[in-house]
Image (cartoon, rainbow, N blue to C red; front, side, top):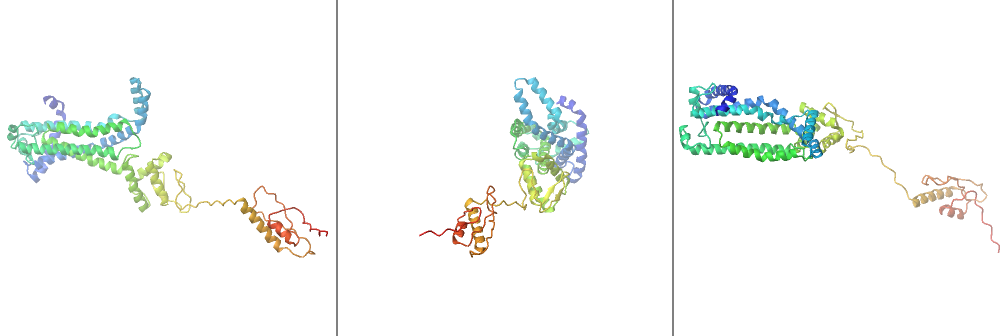
Amino acid sequence: MDTIASLFSFITTPVSWVIVQFHSVYGKIFGPDTGWAWGLSIVSLVILIRICLIPLFVKQIKATRAMQTLQPEMKKIQERYKNDKQRQSEEMMKLYKESGTNPLSSCLPILAQSPFFFALYHVLNGIATGSTIGVINESLLASARKAHIFGAPLAAKFTDGSAKVEALGASLTDVRVVTAVMIVLMSASQFYTQRQLMTKNVDTTVKTPFMQQQKMLMYVFPVMFAVFGINFPVGVLVYWLTTNVWTMGQQMYVIRNNPTPGSKAQAAYLERLTKHVTHHGKTRRRSEKTIVKAIVAKGRDRNEFERSFVNALTKAGLVAQADGTVVKGEAQAVAQTEDGVTAAGAAKRQQPKRQTKAQRQSGAAKGAGDTASDSPDSSGSEDKTTSLEKSDEPQDAKPAAQQAPKGGSNGRSRAQSGQRKGGPQRPKSPSKK
């Protein structure tokens, strides 16, 4: 413990000072010797630290998504240089450098939070052993030793014996029950946080070893918290339970408002965004414009959820712009979307039906019969030539004009039978008896 104290002495005094300042505020409300005053001081310390770590948390999200994007390329490098580990490492570092990705960025919040955790552990251990540390003097030390959370002292552990627990003014049963409940809640919150990340905010179209690692951590971290939790004082359990709940809520907010592309969370977000944009006819928040701008910039590289979003806007008569805004499109225009689906309401060109040969011949015969019926039936009248209409004739038919036969029934029958001969028709000579 002396080694830990010497390593984290630079942070122990600031942490103890922050706890004392919060305790002075809550002590006026709940009383200086109550567990509420000291417990809420620890909770406020966690919230203050996590607020300061928000920029690192944003970097962690970006780094995690960048790592997910690089997983296919990393897998190719591993398969290509599976027998040359040195070349494999060089290519990996080259890939990280070109993409501007740092694998350690995903661990920044945990690494930055570790000094505060060990400093708080050392402060609470000093309270348990009755030694002053940092700005905690004798009077504050006596007040902290009297503080109990649901009957368990701040400095008590699950593994403490009955003699040590009685020295702190509590019973062993109360300490065991309170610490066990807090350990279970701490492990459950960690499991739910990791499970939420794996089931909702992971691109399901890409199967990579990174996903398998995250799935394994979903079960490993809760077990680690349960094993190490029995050696943590009650105050440290309050610290870790608070930070786990904060992480869970912070992640829920990020998943809901800025999901990973291709994930189930993105499908749910774009569904909500579609209803909002079609109802108001525009994007109102800056975050909405950022999402729409990214979708437009992808072009044909959009995933199925993003294409459905663009199609829904098109059907509603809206068009997404490159700057993230949404404007109304022309209602009568034929809108062609990126994936080749014609928008609703667009006029479609009707193709004429192709007629069969029998239909064309019957139409031609009907036109010839109408022409013949209009010609004079007298044999002394002068011959008149008419042309048959060829609107329904095939393209390779010969465009020859036909002369109507002179008023005989034989001429009509030939015209109706589809016979077309050039020149005037000769009357039949009388047969010789």
